[in-house]
Amino acid sequence: MLLKNKTAIVTGGTRGIGFAIVKKFLDNGANVAFCGSCKETVDKAMDKLLQTYSKDKIMGIYPNLMNRNSVSKAFGDVKEKFGRIDILVNNAGISARDKIYDYKVEDFTKVIDLNLNSVFVCSQVAAKIMKDQGSGVILNTSSMVARYGQPSGVAYPASKFAVNGLTLSLARELGPDNIRVCAVAPGVTNTDMVSNLPKELLEPIVKQIPLGRIGEPEDIANSFLFLASDMASYITGIVLPVDGAARS
Ligand code: NAD
View (tube, rainbow, N blue to C red):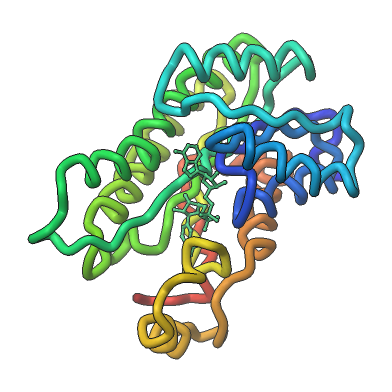
């Protein structure tokens, strides 16, 4: 029970890596508010969670993550229900593989808005609450592509490089307020985001992973659990690769 008496908010918590983090945190005693993009996906995830977990420990919310008023209202509701916010996981993200020659500015902006701007907005709102409480942890989902880039869809690696910059800088800015800030950089992970990748793209990727397989959402959730817990009380300002030593 590494997160007993803690309250966490997980964005992008309705499926994939985020859903695994939500379950892992609940398994470890936390109260968890999870965010989705709309009521339908939140209700669907809630139905699944209620098969195992108590309603008192879970809350589903769907703020516009790029809008400060919307996020402030939703995080305020979480604080009202659970009393505090100890952990924020900025996990919501989208990917796109457009080639540079065809990339529309609005499509580029859409990726940056969710993958980067929402991290700024949610961190800002949560940090104010955590500062008043005297402690907190902010964790971001980066990606292994933020080490090497990728051969198409430039907005995605650009957003994740920026998330790393935001993570390292906020760790320095918020350390004096006793708020830790870290990121996890997953390798290719078995979620909806990769299930529609063509086989000819995936096979060579798996071949160069020393551990011989892609990651499972639970592999990634375990690292979030560690970083969110007091076991990591002296760790801040890191981007932790969880990728089977993949080098794309
Ligand atoms: P996924 O597509 O399964 O889940 C994405 C989540 O983001 C969902 O919960 C969805 O509700 C939420 N989301 C999407 N659009 C949203 C919007 N407009 N507003 C609010 N929420 C929205 O993806 P995943 O693979 O679980 O990815 C989770 C995170 O992990 C992302 O940040 C992604 O970049 C990162 N990541 C994934 C992989 C991978 O291989 N799957 C690798 C590295 C990093």
